[in-house]
Each structure stands twice: as structure tokens, then as C-alpha cells.
Length: 586
Ligand code: PRX
Image 1 (cartoon, rainbow, N blue to C red):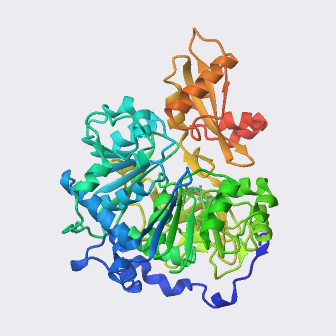
Image 2 (cartoon, helix red, strand yellow):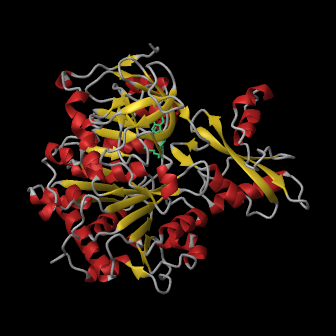
Image 3 (cartoon, helix red, strand yellow):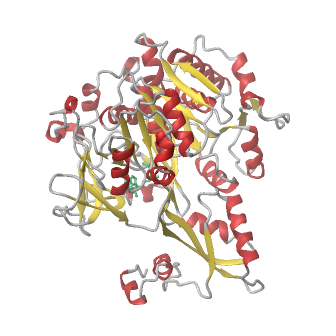
């Protein structure tokens, strides 16, 4: 048995409600089980399914059109509130815009935007028109945007004038791109739009929601794609289907405890999977009021949002929680956080001290849960209905089989660390890596989906995260593929080779660190280091670019020429060279 601290007993209302896994055994046998179990979802006439319909329109059809769906808190102090009826009307109208532009079922529409209300309206409109949305993190520089849009064959891009300018240099390289729709929110940007671009507000003012019909999407149609990093190659486009909404809806209930009256605040950006699955689909399918805060992290800023809008359920991430811990008790005391009744966290290991701190300062435990871009929704969770074991990511959701495997992919006994795996077949399971079938298949072994994480299981069925099984870096909850960073660095004329690792960090868990060798005519200097930092930040994004860069005389490589990132890491961490015997050597 492991040592852990039990934080927060389930409150009386949940007694006896811990889901009983055996009741859900049939889940893997077919998707229809979910359909019967969640009669609240409407489905489309004829048996189709559209996630935007289930999120928004369903509530309007059931008489809740006047309820607030979204409160937007802008970064300049703006505030806008939208009811479910308004969200339906606007997204229908945008669906009609997209139909007017000739969108076809399955077309990829990229959205590169800050958290503006128009991002959400546009995303829902595209989904209703049968398109696939590809949301991109607005901090990205031109390279990641180009790689992703080119890979996916994007046909449309929705963005803001500033962000469009940032990626101006790459737009003509995306050969499939036909139209750029630009949202100049509140006239924030004063220059005229670039020639050929379409003005979002003009399009919306002439479009009509009258007679708009949701495309007859089915449960297996693609809806959303998010790019995620592996240890080799550029990021891969993870494709999800409309049926993922079923699991997003139910885990919203089970793992975030969403009730119809809740005011919900998810701090994730829709450029990452948490920002769509739990920034859009889970809250809206559960009919809650969803607070969208445009600004970035700030202890006072987050607490202001909670205080001002009387947030009841808050979903955030360990890095944010560690920063809040560092900000201390002062900002907590100067805000009224009494509306909060449930806090959850995802994306990185939530250290036990953070759970204990939350319990002291917010007077409730922080509920860790685990999932991935590929899983589309929460798979393992500390439920409101069970005791929270500080440091554990909880137990699998009903119907899902999760296990710790040995190297031959056979289950290991409780207490031993191994490969974290899931039995395929849950509704929000990714259906493809765009155009990379082999890579997709490589994630499945002996009937298991291999997560890429290492974990252990205790005797009561709680899972404990141990680490990643690959070189992927988790910095502030964002996965960074070393290859993407290395590729950007070697584009600089001074750099011959680059090797990138995750260096442990007390706040962000890991920061990106790069080692380079130089081309013959270059000498290492602080000026060159600074130049490389700036170069990579411009190309990638501040959070993805290396925080530290060092030079090495020789890049350690395997016989086949692969850079030995693990050796670089061992050296960085001061591990004796002897300890590198466990490092992969090919
Ligand atoms: O390594 C695990 C870590 O984040 C990875 C998934 O990252 P991504 O696909 O970007 O999705 C993030 C949002 C769901 C996992 O393979 N991770 C996620 N949640 C946890 C975690 N590590 C430890 N504890 C967690 N609760």
C-alpha cells in the first residue's frame, strides 16, 4: 500500500453514489449502450449526432433558451453575456456563412484566435455546418501554424487581424487555404483588413439563421482535431468524432460534478484539448453558465473571475495551482470565494502538497483527473463521490478498463509501476492521427491502447502517475515534442545539431532546454544564445521555445545517428555516467 493523505470525505449527498464499475461492463461492447444510458441527449432526427446541437440547441428546444450560456470577460474589462438562444442563433448564422462559402462535410477549418466570444460562435457554427474545427493556440508563431494547417489541408482560417499579421509570411504556403475570415473585435485593430480577407461581422450581418439546417452529421463523423506531440516527428493531428460529446457530457457530470445551476470556469484555452472538451462541450451539454476569461494567468485575475461571477465549479491545472500557492493566502483572503463548491485539475501530476494547500485555503480538495488529447475526455478521476487520495489521479470512469502492464503488455499486480494502458472502445477515443495510420496503429498493442505514460495502481483501484515513457516534455501542462523545437533551432544558420530535453522545474514541472552544436564559422557567446532564444520564440511560441540553451562540443548520438536526449538529460541532472546504462541506446 502506498502512503497517501486522504483529503475530504465525500459529502453526504454523494454517499453510496460511487459508480460501480461492474454495472458498466457492457460499455465496451458497443456504442449503443451509451445511447440508451444517456437519454438526455437528443440525437438528430434519423439517428444522426451533432455535438454543437447537443451543446447548445438542445437546451433551447427544451425551453431553456433564456438561460445564460456564456459570460465573456474580456482582457480590457469588457463583459458580454449570451443566452443559449443567442448562442444558437449566432452559431446558426455562422453555419449559414460557412454554407455560403461552400463548406463541405469534413472540411478542416482552423481557428487561430484569442478567447473571444466569436471563437466559440465560429467553432459551433462550423460544427453545425459539418466541418472539422482545428483550434490553434494563439501564442503560436508562424511555424507551428504552418505545420498544422499544411498537414491537415486547411480550407478556411478564422483569426484576428493581429494574429493574421503574425503569420502573414506562411499563409501563401498553405496551398489548400481558400479564405481567411478576420474578427476585428470591438474595432481593437485600426488598420483596414488585408486584401482578400473576409470580415466576420460583415459576413454575419448579411447571413441569416432562418432556414439554417444542421448538417446531418452522424456519430462517426469527424468534428474536432487537435495536434499533439510525440517524441519523433512533427505533431500529429488527433481526430475526434461527434460521438465524443457523449463522454464529454457524462464526465462533465461524473468528474466535474456539473449541475444545471452551476457557473463554471475552465482556465484552459481551446487551442488545447481541455479548452474544447471541457471549455465548450462538457459545460454546455450540461447546460451550465460557462465563464470565458480572455486574459492569462494571474492570482488576482482568477480570483476576481470567481468572485465576480460567483463561480461554483472550477477546472484548472497544476502549474496554475502552484503559482496560486506561491501567491499565497493574501489574494485568497481579499476575495470572496465562497461560491466555489468543486475544484478539479488536469494536465500534469498534481503534487500532494497542492491538494493539501487547496484544502486549507479553498476549504475543499482539488480533484485530480487524468486524460489525454487522444482520449478526448476524462478517463480517470477523483470523483466528488469518493475520498481524494492526495497525489493520485483517481479511478477509471465507469465502463473504462485501465491497467498497468509489463513489457509484454500483460497486466501487472497492484503496487508495481508499468505501462499505463486502456482498453479501446470508449466513445471519445481518437479515431485517427491525420494521415498517419502507422503511427496510429503503433499506439495499440495486444488489445490495449498504450498511453505513453508510466503509472501504478493501488489495491483499491486508484492510479498513481509515475512519469512519461517517452521524451515528450510537459511544460505547464502543454506537451512539447522535442523534434519540433529541434527542427526550429537547426533552421538558424549557426546551429548544426540540436537536442532538446525537459528540465525539472518547481512550477512548470518541466521547462524546455536545448543543447546545440555550432556550424564551423560560429562561436558560442551570450549574444548568440540570446539570438537563438529569440529566434525560436518567434518561430514557435514563448512556452514551447527553449527557456535555456547551451552549447556542446559533440552531440551524443546512437550508432544509427539518433540524438540521445536521455543522455543529455542525465548529464544535465548530474547523474553519474554509469547511470546512463538504462538510457535507450537506439
Ligand atoms: O503525461 C500525461 C499528462 O499529460 C499527458 C496528456 O497531455 P495532453 O494530450 O496535452 O492532454 C492534456 C489535457 C488532458 C498525459 O499523457 N497528464 C495529464 N493529466 C495528468 C497528467 N499527468 C499526471 N497527472 C494527471 N492528472
